Structures are given as C-alpha cells and as structure tokens.
Image (tube, rainbow, N blue to C red; front, top):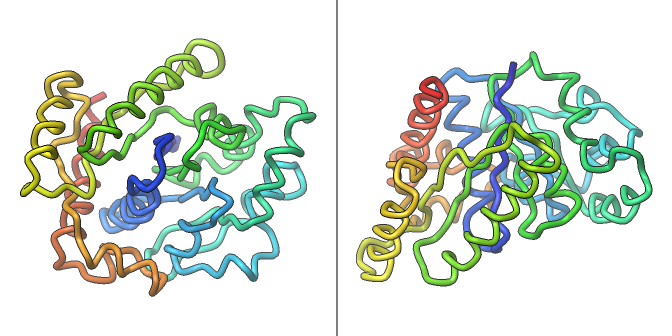
Length: 256
C-alpha cells in the first residue's frame, strides 16, 4: 500500500514543485517506487520531470473527469526514474467542470486506489491555493508535507494551511495529518531566517524535519533542462539536502 503525501502550501513561490520533483527523484534513488502527481495546471512538475506537457494525449484532467485511467495517463521520467501523472493547462478547466460531479472531492482518491499497489510513495504537487484541485489532493493523502521559507509572511500563511488541514481532517479525510514542515531556500546568513527557523522548532517540535534545504543555484537551473536537481548536479548542496530529506522521510514513516 502506497504512502500518499501532498506537497502543499497556500503561499506561492515557496518551493513546492522543486520539493516534489526532487523528493520523487531522491526516493527513487533510494530504490522506492514513486508516482509524482502533478495537480497544478501550470504543469511545472511535469516539465521538471522532463515530460513535454504540450504533447500529452491523456493527463490528470481526463483522470479527474472520468475520461481516462491513471494507468493510461502515467508516464515515466527518464531522468528521474519515477512515474508521473502529468498535467497541462486543460486542468484549469477541471475546477469548473468538477463542481457538478458526484464525489467531486474524492475523484483523485478513487483514481489512485486503482494503482495503489504499484508504488511505495505517491507524491501530489498541489497548486498554491485552496481550490477544488487542492481539496482533491488533501482528500487523497495520508499526510501533508509543508515546504516553507523562513520569513515572516510564511508564518502567516502556515496558520491558514494548518487550519485548512484540520477542517479537511474533521469533515472529509480522518487519515489526514501533517507529516512535517520542511525548511527550504534557507539562507543561514540572514538573521530573520534563523529566527523564524527557531520559532518553527519551538512551536512545532518534532514536526519540523531536521533536514534543511539551502538556497541553491543548481536546483534553480535544473528545471530548464527537464531534469530533477538531484540528477542534474548530485554534488550540489541542494541536491545532497534533498537526498538526505528522502532518507529522513523514509525513516520517519517507518517510525509512525
């Protein structure tokens, strides 16, 4: 049975997609069977995994609307060695079209149930908003990984996200919980980063992953080549951090 995790944050530009793609590649590097679900109409995770979103015949859009199966839509990232349920701009239309469908909040959950035994981990890259797509991700997942920058506004958004997770847990998905907070794009030279990091540890304790992802140029360059950062430059500090994060996540899941 696969462990299904959302990579979510209602704030944009906090490294969700970078985390999703590199965690998928990092877990694959650890011999885990991984499916990366791109739930964002921008399709950045799809492109970051080396898949051309403009040539897709079947995508997550068809899966959510019942016009296709995950087995038909999934593709393999040749560079990252994991499977991808890809997305493109068509997915933006699903927001409107799903409103009138039965079980609209659990369409993704039901679709993933058919391939549950094929993977050890299913990672869902959510869009940066509390939308019907994000709600589908939260209803399908066992837990949420929250990537966040150590800055003041990130703390504001975090409280909103935690409240959202509590509501989904209470009303739609009793299995849902926060797996952990991942500090990303971290610059130790900034006093504010250190202060916010300390606040997170004080308030959330063990929920804060020990691994910290540094701000890293090589990670930022990798998507333009359609290659995960951990493959693009394995020696880079950012790549090594994501490999370490994959190991920490596997260890944390085993101890739950």
